[in-house]
Each structure stands twice: as structure tokens, then as C-alpha cells.
Length: 240
Image (cartoon, rainbow, N blue to C red; front, side, top):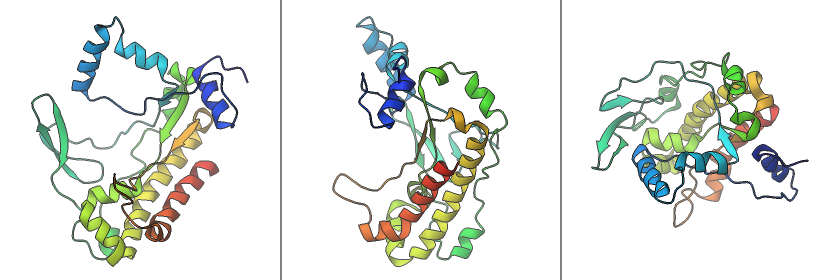
């Protein structure tokens, strides 16, 4: 395979063959205020930060546009998963902090079944393919679609401490929540891949499993509670 562009370098690596150049992805998104810092730092060296990132990264992100009800543009707002967030200014910029945890205190799967989970149909799948084809980076770079982080989202919705305690004291509750979260991502992935699967090179599945000092949950708990849902997402990606 000729490695004339970034996409081909990544696909060469995926085929377990040595690449002429090591594929590279930035893997992070700078906050607006950090973007200003990077712009200034690079400009002092005669470099454009925007151009540097564009030409050096081999992977570009993709996903269908959300067309559901957007939260109002205020200081406090409710996000996709029903979590209330507040914009906190720290002087050099701002970040979003959780104000409440909508699943905190839930004790039964029945309570979770009644919760207003986000709708995977609230995305513009019909325009997804055209959107990708109109993007010149799709031909040059490997296309990555993010497709789920179920346990991390459960921790967001419940609060980290309660979520971890529930894996021990109420594992069926955790499994029920993960089923709802995973089901959302499965459907969104299925519909996205149906429209533009031939244009997607990478399906990215992530989760929070550890800290700086060790695992967040035991290997046994991971195997019993979380791994089946990770396998569902992986299976959905390969099936699609």
C-alpha cells in the first residue's frame, strides 16, 4: 500500500505492518483559552498552530450532527444526559462543573427505566454521508467516530463515590443503567454506520477504568458488570 497520505499510514499500522512514518493523532482538544496560548507560542516561532495541527495529525473526528433540543446558552444549563452543569470562570477562562447528579439516590432498575434517557434518533443521519464527503480531510486522514463511554457517563450521572459503591452493593442497578447508556450508543452507531460506514476507519470506544494509583473497580467487577457492555459496543462496530 502506498503511504501517500495520513489515512494510508494509519491503515498500514492497522494491518500490523511497519509504516514508513509513524501515524500520529493529537487526541485532545484545546480549550479556547489554551488555543490562544498555543497560537501565541507558535507564532513566536513563526509557526501557525492551526496549520501545525492540521498537517501533522493523521486522524480526524466525525459524527452525525445533533438536531435535538439544545440547552439554553446560560450560565447554568442541562446537558444531553440530564446533568445540570454550571459555567465556572477561573480568571483565564471557564470550565463546566456538575451541579447535580440526576441518578443519585436511585435504588431500583424500575427507577432507571422511567428516567428520560437521551434519544439516539435526535441526530441528522440523513445528512451524515454528505457532510463527510464535503470534508476534504476525509480523503486525506483516517476518520474516527467516537462511540461510547458507558461507565464514565454513569459516574457523571450518579456521582463517582455512589457509582463505585453501587458496583459492590447494587450491581444490578449499575447493569441496568449501563444497558440504557450502551443502548443509546449502539443505536447511534448502527444508524451512523448504515449511512456512512464505508467512510469510517476507526470506531473509538472509551471509558474511565483506573486512577493514578490503580483500578477504579476490581477485575472481577469489571468482568461481571462492565465488560459485557464494552463487548456489545465492539460487536456493534464490527457488525456494522
